[in-house]
Structure formats: structure tokens, C-alpha cells
Length: 290
Image 1: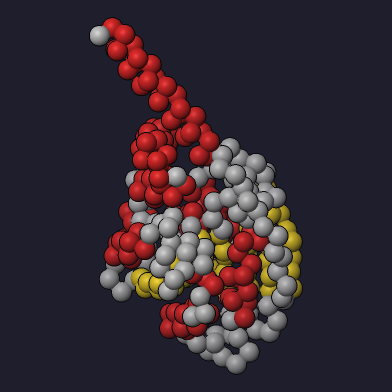
Image 2: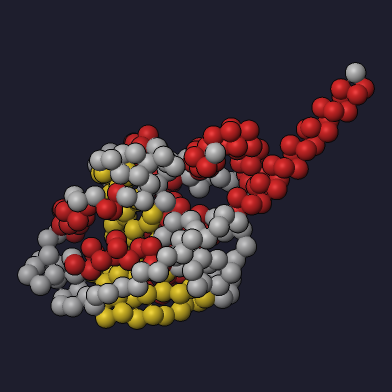
């Protein structure tokens, strides 16, 4: 019994230590920046102050002709501002100035250890303050979760909110990600990793979950989600959709699309235009609001 107890204790200690290591590594998930600079309008490549020091790299692209407003676009985990250029191009065609930044510890922005959606939200808030006017706010994946945090904190700074490939509950999303990465790893170590993360952040993961913040959002929301998203299944988007006040949110499901593919759907440009025109009013000839 003593030998068995020692073996069991050793196995438990090993599991705890491994889960701690994996929890640290999960926060350092490899960055995969892309290179895709804007190719329309007047492009300004800028740096603005980041929360707590350092700076954020940022593009501001002003389209030709009358300007209808400003859109701030926030990328997902591990990416950079270039990732949002194809999406921004659609808004540029609709007459909007587009602003794309890289979150801290992403792209060419300043380093910041242990980034998460809340810290990405703080970066969005810095961009909103820099823009200095109410904007359309568009986030993808973790950037979408950050966008809803920023919109909840600064309701007067956001006119419309776009959430692409978002999730409803943070803990549920993390477990889904780990199972997507590796089913065995996700089931064996996922719950422990989520526990350590929750402990590190004072058990606040649930409080900043998009579904918990959704009832307090007062601007129109459009959720865009891939039908075949394996990281965050469609059921996550449906749950998030139900969390908003009745009539506040619309859901567009891109047929056959994966996690980052809803914006590649042929219907995407028309869906954006229709939503914006109905919520803000149609643009006059040349792109300015009617």
C-alpha cells in the first residue's frame, strides 16, 4: 500500500507540475503574423501609446471620396494587424476609414507577458481613445471577445459591434481550443489548465465571458460565424446570440466556413452593407451617409 500510495502521489504531483507548465505555454502560444499591407486609399503607418507603456503599431486608411465614419478592427490570438486587412477592405469600399492595430505582444507592437482577451480589450480602448469619435468595432476570435469587453466598458464609443468567430463562455472556449489542438491533451490536461488560469486571474474568467456581458450591450450587434468552425463550434455563436437583448443582435452563419473563413463567404460584403445600411441609414452617392 505504501508503494502504491507513493506511486499515486508521484503521478499526481507529476500531473500538477505538467499542467502548470502547459498553462504557462498556453499563454505563450506561437505568434503567426502575416504580411498583407493595405492597398487602397491613403495609408498612414503609425504608433500610438499602449496601456502601461510601450506602443501599438497601427494603420489608418482613409478611403477616396466622402467618409462615412471609422471602423476599428481587432485581430485574434497570435495574429497581427495585417490579418484584418481583407476585412477592412470591405469597409473601405463602403466609404469608411479603417483603423487596424496589432495587440501588445503581437506583430510589431510592444511586448507584454501573459496577454489575454482583457488585455487585448485594453489595447482596443487605447485605439478608441486615440480615434476620438464613436466607431464601428469589429473583432475576430479572441479579438471579438476583447471587442465586446471594450464595448461594454465604453458604450458611448461604439456605434455598431461586429463579432466574428466569437465564443460565449471563456472556460468553455478554452476547453474547446485544447480539444481542437489535441483531443487527448484537451481532455486530460484542459480542465487543470483552465483551473490554473482561473486562479491566476482571480477566478474572473466567467465574469468577462461574452455571454455574461452581452445583456449590457446597447448597440446593434452582428455575429458572423463559420458553419464548420472546429475551434468554437456554431453552438457557441448561437448561445451568444441568445444572450443579447431581443432585437439587439443578428447572426449570420457562413455556409461551410471554418474558424477564420466567415469573411471569405461570397455573401459577406452584402451582409455587412445590409446591416450597416439598416442600422445607420444608407449611404448617399459617393459613400457619405444619406
